[in-house]
Image (cartoon, rainbow, N blue to C red; front, side):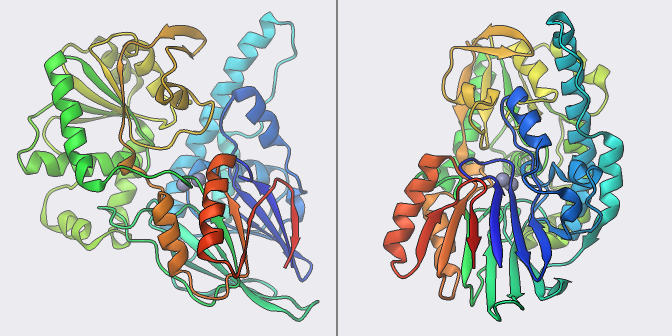
Length: 466
Ligand SMILES: [Zn+2]
Ligand SMILES: [Zn+2]
């Protein structure tokens, strides 16, 4: 069996790992690279393999850095099945067309500038029609239902607790050429134990080799007990200043987590009523999918769905779909909370809210999730005083707050905890999905914890025989 790291190696986005065994090719994830527009368009167009020669895809979860390049893979000739959990498939049904729409808009925007520079126009790499077409290649498989997906390859999903539908992927591989049988675990993205909505990442056994994410290697989130208090304090400060609280949040999971927390805080009398807007059609649709898949959520949430009206809604909450209503938020008077996507502030309506509000010191921008290097969100989090938003330079006068405990990613200690719950010889461990410093920190800790195994940081296009 040959394993090749075709993305999310030395970085956090573009997750793609290729397994070749018994003359078949299986791709784990097919994510988009995110970051600087010009670099990523080129990188996303060039697959380090022929898409037409892939036999099957197994998808860990719906996030675009794991699923977003599927429309292009299919457009370039991939005709096989895409295996995913039912909730992942449903989330992809709204996320992939949305990402394609953003891509098409990006190309239109770039072309406007290319005309001025006398450059030929670019074609979109894929379209919304490609996204919709690729959804027909999905085959859904529930957690804990082993399924043979290729000759000598059996796949099982177990919960990763990272986002609705997220899975760790266990592959039982019978290599007919070498006669070796082995069990490979791909972590996908690993969530945090104790999350309010999601089931804790599940343990696994008899694992021979691991492909493991390392997003937060060497980093620790603040304690959960402080998170709601911190959120309340930020909201109270914003109310005193009569400013706006702008929250860039992933439309999927982070927005629902925020709504669930705000509803609980309001229900418990900890927060006064504040006009709150979710300005993201994708987030509105994703919230509907959360309600549909309550079976995959914590029992408390399931109960709340059946017993209370709506654990993701409260008085004063407005779900904004139309462009006109979104634009009207620009002229909103008085204090308000605006939650909008994307979480890394790379695209979407959040860009307009940041343009409008980042220069005013009464306002606060609150980050509740990870931002990849060089994204606008990352620059604001890092404290850049000037940022470029949609082509114009802005001075940052708004307060910047960070609340990482809402993160969907396990931190350093939680990654080690997860690793400890993976049973088996764990002969070779490959670290992916991390900036180099993060992967190095995790490697050092794992090497100490697991001296019998080999802990390696995966390199882009590195081939490994297992
Ligand atoms: Zn993810
Ligand atoms: Zn990811």
